[in-house]
Amino acid sequence: MQRSGTQHVKVIVQYKRTPQPTHWARVQAIGGHLSSKLHLINSTAYSVPANRLQELANDPDVDFVSVDHPLKGFDDYTDAAVNSSAFTSLGYDGSGITVAVIDSGINNQHADL
Image 1: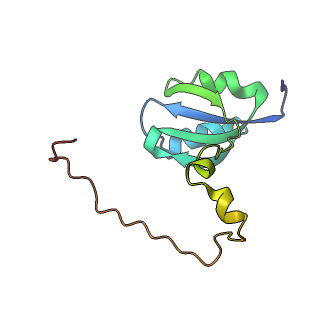
Image 2: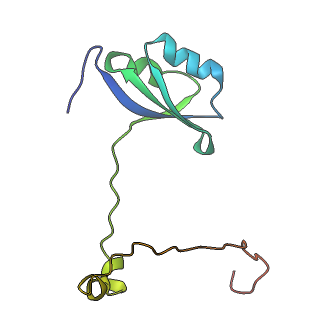
Image 3: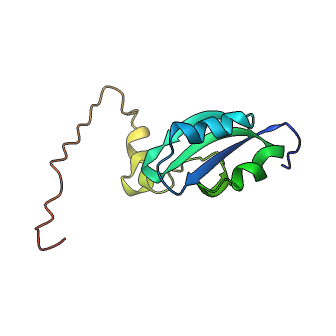
């Protein structure tokens, strides 16, 4: 879908360093709206007018601008791997079951690592 003019586009902006309030203010000044802070990857998600994207990309602190595409997860293999159809045919659906995962960390001194 091609967008133009003042129609807003969802983008992820990767900065050359951790984004600061001054970066958010620059995007707000061009009509953008902060959606999410992604500090782990020096990025921020915004909704920005399409006609201002080039201006955002030209910011000297911006490393990369990409469209924020919707993602969808798939569970293609696990059902077959555990033969879940055998249990669902018996009327089991997993309700009332609690699973706990206890992770004590990684021993980086272990020979396998």
